Structure formats: structure tokens, C-alpha cells
Length: 467
Image 1 (tube, rainbow, N blue to C red):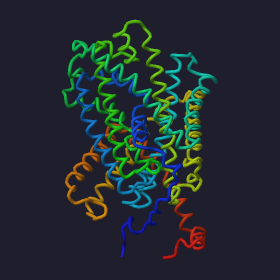
Image 2: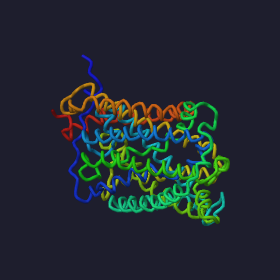
Image 3: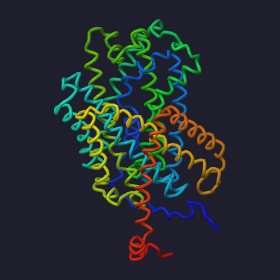
Image 4: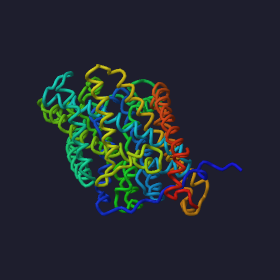
């Protein structure tokens, strides 16, 4: 008789007892992790990017916020069910078996270190405003690598330092954005807004086109779930941090975009390369806005790099504990997966060097675009896992009185994830599938090792096959 993958896979290992040294993320720090990872450097370009579509893009933002919060709520429910480090990997493997778990971990890992390389490249662009370093050469590369390795060193120092850096950087990035938003709204001029449907595609077409750009602004809602093993009381705090962090990021995005729309004339905003700088200059006069925004952007991206560096090691760590990633990824020190961080930062550094040294900008941009696809794979698998448990109706997995509410949230989050996937574009999906399925070779090798003669001998010697 054939059995389902979930029945034939190895039983998940129970979560290892955690020492007081490991679980140092309380609710404020976990919320800062989510908010800091969602808000990277993109916030400083979003108003100009969506300006060509008109104020219909604000409506798109509102709809996307609802979808992102639904996804955050689903991650909170999944974390209550299984509060282990690994988030989407853990949920996919528990519901659908080893292969689905591996795909979630592999795709998420790709997303993190390629995105970190992109953040470092963007950070050098903002650094150039404050201290001209040029656009090529040894100094530029050195600056980009420094931006990557400083957060990595904070991670290697232990989870306590990761939390401190994330909390401080989130406050520092939120404060100037909040000031610009409040001051900008105080000087709001409706005449600057421009037409509702500036592109002339109809409100539905304009909203969809704007959403294609805005969709990826909410990547990172899973951050607390991914690091659940380092969060105090994860059954309670992961869900709260996911919702609070996502809602906080949404407030920053919406108020900031609205403030820029109302202070910078639409005709100028469409062609702006520094919309927040233009907003500051429009309100206060002078030309110091560029430097102020550059500082805020650097702080924002440093915080994002700090959080994403931690996440780059969490999915491989959880998969390695189950034998689905090389065992070295499960090595920890002070609660941090050391090998995973070093490998991820090294790969991101290699991409960064290739971008600056060889001028492979087109290839690099393609890889970054591919990450928009790979990031949605864990989302789809996680929301599908939630729907799987709801459809099974397993008593210990689902609370019957809340079945309708949870099913609605699950379907909404799944639809939001599909919208993310569609927004990536045909080319990104095509290339992303190739990139994702390249990991099948890794999965094949590790599975053969686990189930081959050598793997069986090792399991027998340790008693792992005993009933």
C-alpha cells in the first residue's frame, strides 16, 4: 500500500532544549527584526517608482497591506503549531515531506544571500553621496564588502548582539522616515498629487501595474517565524511580532509615499532619482536633503543586512539538522549557525565583487530579479501547509471554532503569494525555476547519502533505526 510523503518521511526531531543564552529575542526585538527586514533601501525610491501610475498606486498599497498582514497572521498560526527555527522549511516539511522542505529551504537561502549582495551594492550608491568612492575600483569593492561583513561580525558575536543592532537600527531608520512623513503631511498640497490614473490604463490596470512594483516591498514578513527558535515564548510572540512588524512597515510605507506625493509636484516626482530628498528640500529649502536621506538609507540597509544575514543561516540550519542540507550548516556558536553565515556572506561577497570588478551588471540584475521568484516559493508552501492542516481537520492542529476564519486567512495569504509570483514576471519565473531546480542535484546527493549503505550503517550504529 502506498503512503503519502508526509507519512513516509523521517519524523521531525523535537526541538532541542534551548539555553537562556539562545532565546534572547523578546517581542520588541522580534518586531524590529520583521520591520527592519521589510524596510530596506527600497522605501527611498518607491514614491518615484510608482508616480507614473498616479495616486491609484496608493490604493494598490492598501490592498497589498491587507494581503501582507494576512500572510503575517498565517505565519503566526504556523509558529504556534511548530515554534522551531526554520519557519517555512519546517512547515513545508511537516506537511508535505522532505522534498518540499528542501525546496523551501533552498529557495529561501538563495533569496537571502543574493538579496544581501544587492543591498551592499545599493548601500555603496548612497555612501557615494556622503563620501565619493567612485563607481569602480578597489575602494568601491572594499566599501561594499565592509557593508556586508560588519553585520556578519555582529551575527557571529551571538544572538544578543544581533538583537541589539536590529533594535537600534530599526529605531534609527524609523525616526527620520517618521519625521519626513509627519512634516510632509503638514505641508501637504493636493495640487501636487497629479491624476488618479496617470498611465491611462484604467484604475484596475493602473493598480495592477503599480502593485507589480510594490509587491516585493513586503518580503520579510516571515522573519520572526524563520528565527522562532531564538524568540522567547515563540508560540505567542512570533505571531504578534509578524503582525506588528508588518503593520509598522506598512505605516512607514504609506505615510512616507503619501507625504512625498503631496510635497513634490507630480511632473517632477516622475523623473526624481531621490524622492525623499526632493521632499525634504521642498519643505525646508536648500539642498541638504540628499545627505540626510543618504544617512537614513545607509542605516536602513545596514539594519536590513543584519537581519537578513541571520535569516540566511536559519533555513539551512534547520534543514541540516534533518539531514537535508550538509551537516556543517548545523554548526552553532552562541546560538548562531556559524558555517551558514560564513558561506552565505562569502557567496554574497563573490557576487558583489563580480558586479563591480567585471561589470557583470546585467547578470547581477537577473539574479536579483530571480530572487523575487525564489522568495515566494516558501510563502506558497507555508500557506499551502496551513490549508493542508485545515483540510485534514486534525484536532491537535486546528481549532474548530476558528476554522472559517483560519481558512479565509489561509486562502487570502495563498492568493497574496500567487500575486507576488505573478508580479515577478515571465522571465523571472522561467529563470527562477531553473535556479530552484538546480538544487534537486544537491537533494539527490544528500538523500542518497542518508539512505545508502553508509547512511544506514551510521544510523544503525547510533540506534536511529530502532523502533
